[in-house]
Amino acid sequence: MAAKSPNRHKSKSEEQLVEEFASGADGAPTRNLEPSAPRTHKKINVPFNEYEFQQLEEAANRSGRSKLNYLRWAMLEQAKRDLDG
Image (cartoon, rainbow, N blue to C red; front, side):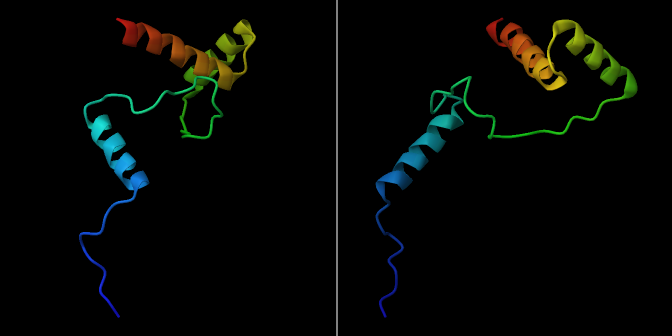
């Protein structure tokens, strides 16, 4: 049985993955992200104290949004301010 060569050639997809990884090291985006893409990438669990949750409920109710939608909207609005200077 022949041993596998340690210098085997990388497939095109492996080369692309390496290039994407290397490009990302400089902080350069490797792909265009779609704002309306399905929300399947990551999820987080955010604990709230009673005061924070009451504020969230009131703000969401007044804005006509669900609590989850309000959190997403508020995060994106603040990110615009922080990232756009």
